[in-house]
Length: 480
Image (cartoon, rainbow, N blue to C red; front, side, top):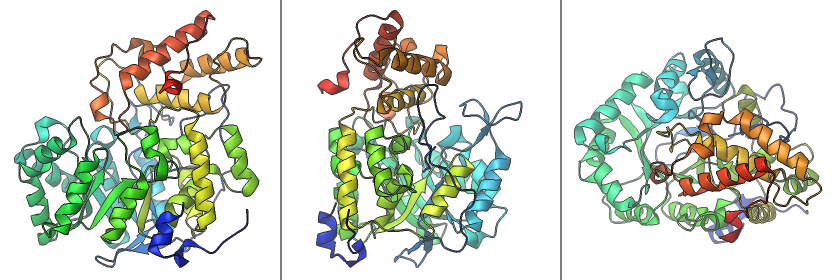
């Protein structure tokens, strides 16, 4: 593929027409019979070479790699690290990784009262308070998802508690969390932030300096996104930044994944028009873009044999000039090391490379994966179902051709064993899809609008058919 000049030489119109959380091991641990992206993770990353973007609102020099404190390392009672929702956060490892991040130029740390079962802010505060305050920027959110937290008093207490947990006197980047979520995005936005006066309170805190930058993270109902930007157009408020989902699938194909989603091209373009800096979440779609189907991975490795599929995705997200920082939930040290290398410094993609990556995203859509980003907003399930783990296993095996659809397939028995053995090792039996009763309490909380009970039922039927060795049901996602 011939090289072209970087995007920085394009006009905004040309740029908008043109079409790194994680590492090769970013998603869940490798499953028996299911390959993982095996590119070698480097042992160290360079110092002093991090790419920075300047926030034109206040001159903040922000690292292009942002540390998402959503998937912190865990430890069990025996002291061995594991990925288990019931395990305690490994504070020592969090401290080590935060130290490494700051040493290598990362200065943006994103957390929330809702992350890690409410423990993220506390652990983040411990790790960061060991460093001078001018070495880091803290982003947190008013995560008042439950109606019990919609009162003005509850919202103020949540904000004040964030200051206590983070051990700071001010928040650098404060977000309204997940605007547009729910069955009626506009009604919930007004109930959470407007009718109770909480938005006015946050604006007052910005005027006092307790909040330095005020913005929002967007999930879902585009009417709410447009409404918030229209407020700025009318001079009713100024948004210092906004957080959106952007990657090479969602740029043009978010609507293909789910009809209620909005393409990142539109979201980014609207922010760019108003010179509102964009913070990027889900550059790897919750790890799905680290486990591409083999034919797609081979296309990337053929182009650059020494680059991982995750590195391509991070370079894609970081290339857009109005992007302030790209968030990555770096559970393991190797995630952090590779991501630091990717942005130390960033090698921007050309306009041709952007279009090429989007063509790979279009091909990925044809595999009909479940659009789960492992955000865990659907959790906990009242019946103990491990919803994200089930979807992660299914998607991973689907990408690796370990979801057989015909018993006559020559690879049927190998793929069948890989799926079933991997399923039992990834998800405890009592937390598997067949225990879902379809109560539907999870779906309203899903930013990706997944019909979770429907997907649980489909996977349960498929697993049962595999166990019986009988006729396999068709993939319902291929019929949509």
